[in-house]
Image (cartoon, rainbow, N blue to C red; front, side):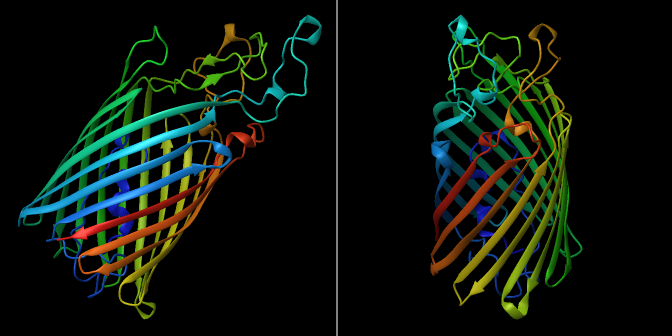
Length: 411
């Protein structure tokens, strides 16, 4: 089927090396494209492709910024074997919330005992960080009649995190390639490297299984659905996030005393995604809508709605506006601060990403086929996150601009 140009680069997103990338290739061809590729200006798969992409993610207020450079090569060796490899470099810099509420909401030592005097900041404290990530993946695809088998091997390293991953994806084309069944499984062998001098490296392992189907409903309509189950176990804390307890002695408003967060060492995740792609032939366009339902053993329920329009302009340009809405409930063990540390609950975290929240993403991308051998992609997205629990400070939630530019060579 005609693919979203951005699908070519899904694995280059920050921290993608920590996630299962089940890029199961659809075998739906011909009828969906109807002689023109409305959602991509790419050429036939039988050609070699070399691509480069640069992405800038920058949160407002000097918070986290990520610059990503990625290179991908996709080359057919024979009629039944295709090799794909990718290398990614992320440069990360900026500030992120520590987990503490704003100093204005913390009880400090009274001034009569030598404590600080106000007024205190109403924004959450931030901690600066710098990091680099290097990642790579290799995935040969073997096509034997209606069968397509894709093993994948991946590696990712940061100063505090190392990940090795292996995946196996299988696609079976049925009903004259109008139906494609997808199966996938992966395992990530991760190690969280210690932050403190006396801390020890901690293992983290993730297993994922996927089952899905792509169904051609008509010459202009494609339905896709998949279900993923994931199991994480090991060290699941964020070692850079702390928790405030009421009975901790507080002396410095700018640097509150926090305890390390404590999350369960096991997490089950269930994800269901359904999407529908419809070609709008009179307008030389196509539209794609998707819904994603997420549930995990932390107690989080999440809903994501995606809508994208792919408009062909002239013969060589595709313009694609998009919108995404995301909502989630809070984890069972989330709070902005807790009571007496001696009577602490079994698990606790003040990471705003586990709170009840919603986010909005809107953007526009352009895909331009400059020459028969050269395609250029560019895009912009605006991302906004908001808290909904009425307790977590809104200053904890980021807003960001995302810029991308890339090129592909066909030879």
